[in-house]
Length: 133
Image 1 (cartoon, helix red, strand yellow):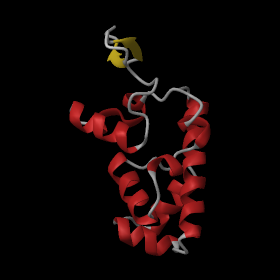
Image 2 (cartoon, rainbow, N blue to C red; image 1 turned 45 degrees about the vertical axis):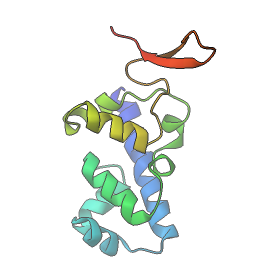
Image 3 (cartoon, rainbow, N blue to C red; image 1 turned 90 degrees about the horizontal axis):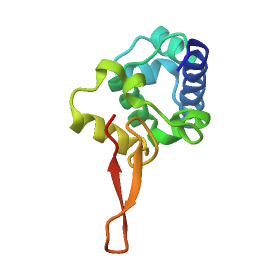
Image 4 (tube, rainbow, N blue to C red; image 1 turned 90 degrees about the vertical axis):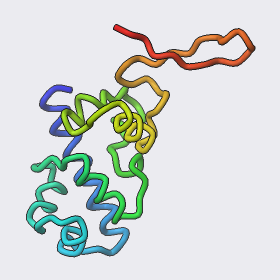
């Protein structure tokens, strides 16, 4: 993801957080307090200037009572392959946490980092296999 795409991603993410916060009729101050941030930090996240760590994003989504996939920018979550390891960086510790996050945001088994492919298992059903590079 180049710098321009990354900036756009966080701008859209912040916009989506703001929209869901308004829908729940929460003030910035209230949501910030619920997730342990200062109001100014939440303002910066909503304006795309501050990039929330994964655990903070999860707390935001929880308190907005929303689905991860509903808060993530639609242009990236539904139309483009997501390289979760690049987006999350060092915030993911181990394959179990990576799998948990993939499942939580609805990209498990879809074309994402690692290029999941389908192949015939011999019993008439298709199974997924991860290609190794």
